[in-house]
Image 1 (tube, rainbow, N blue to C red):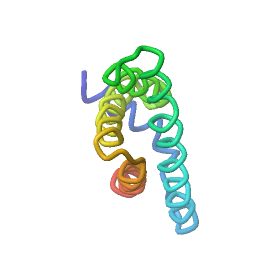
Image 2 (cartoon, rainbow, N blue to C red; image 1 turned 90 degrees about the vertical axis):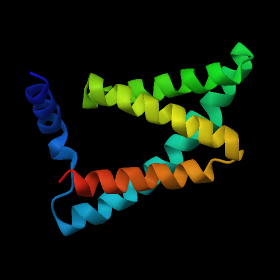
Image 3 (spheres, rainbow, N blue to C red; image 1 turned 135 degrees about the vertical axis):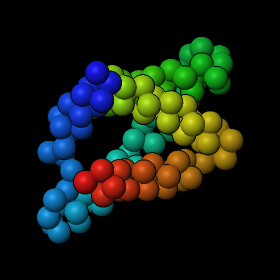
Image 4 (tube, rainbow, N blue to C red; image 1 turned 120 degrees about the vertical axis):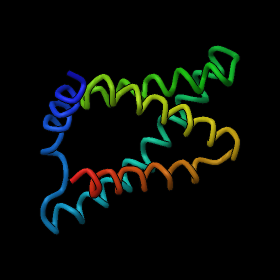
Length: 119
């Protein structure tokens, strides 16, 4: 049952993956944009706002990661949960390094590789 659910998830998002050379070039551009913009929004803004609101850095990280995972729910519940965990790791990285750049780079690489490896 799990395998068929996973196959259905993969099939539901397969159309998003690049197939032609032009699509691969555009995929890289989209991945760079997502890596930079999503880190700026989720770690640069939301994480700080949630931390200030709750007066708790861990809560800010977890709440921001939860919204990050939910924003990817179009990929299915299992993927949204995985991405939420990735959001926690990226949040910890941003807090530890006091910079969004390492997260932007790793997020971009994750997206680029995800588009090419899943294909």
